[in-house]
Length: 458
Image 1 (cartoon, rainbow, N blue to C red):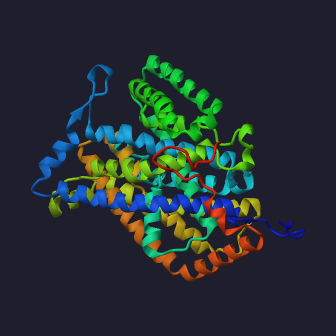
Image 2 (cartoon, helix red, strand yellow; image 1 turned 60 degrees about the horizontal axis):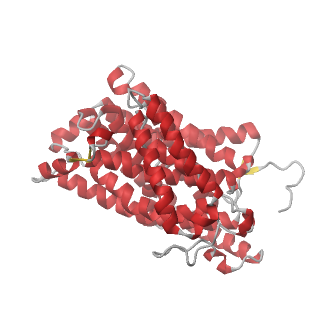
Image 3 (cartoon, rainbow, N blue to C red; image 1 turned 30 degrees about the vertical axis):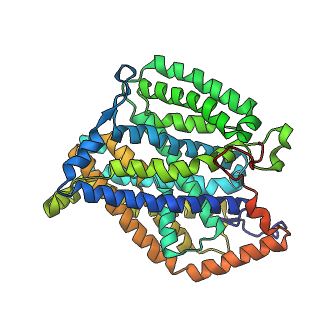
């Protein structure tokens, strides 16, 4: 790539590598299906929770199962939040490590913009919520609810409006969501963990350490043999999860730690980093359908079911400072935080937005980031407790704010579809002119039920 002319301003949100664009596109296609399932699960939960058969919904959600001596007798709703969401956060750990070890974001010049924007998109909504609820210490506890972005819901909106979002904006959106999730899980670990028990926490380091050692030492073995990963690594992961859960730290933190322990780069025996995807990418390929197709929709089903109580109940929810803070924070605070931080970064670094984009594109993506759902619902439950009126009001606000943010983002981005199609065609033409064959799209490992007959060895 030629250097910019002397005196030219550096650009931000420019095109990433073609391989990274293809990889991000594949991830977002999977998340589109997950987003559709998420919406369906949410609608079913809301309809059931407000139907004449609502008692059966809450009885199912609160039905307990598990082994009490190990402190694992939990309701189905708690199993979904503590257990299934650990799979979702495992994917977050995998994606985050892969981006910074082998992705475009390993370069500081490319990572600083989405990371800084994500921080702005967390801080501003949290401050807005805190200001709205400053007079109530009880409701102030929910300050972290509007901090996260739901990538599955966001890409589902993109699929509906048919937006051909350029590769740079897709990477920007995904990175925003991943960094948001990392910040959110850090907040959960620090601010929403109670009665920390040191013994099980230190004991969790043993299976976690064994898991990391085996994954690093035998990455080729576990990449080539799917059954071995299920039979050896999965039990170690479950034990780590159970001990973290017993320690008082939210169990989803274990998912992130396990994801970060998986190696990204292929071993030298398999050709090194340039020979193809490593174990992290293979695991992502295996587990994303489970996360997007089962874990997150099931969590949404058990978490989003709120008895609205008719018009009076809805009015009561919307007049609660909790709901007002969440709606303003997600719909206004998110885009303001992301857009303002990105703009300030261009001023501080004397950079310019890439010539293929306009600030309205950044605004549209920033509005999409206001769709806070999965992690927001989780933090709402941790803040107020399931069944608490504030928790119910928070969930109503999350649903309402996500819908409003989706509609506003769709209104902005749909006006740019023609421009996006032209940019997408130009990207593809440039890639083909660089000699990248069309079959490059198929270099990802192909999962199959029998194991790894067709999978590359990491």
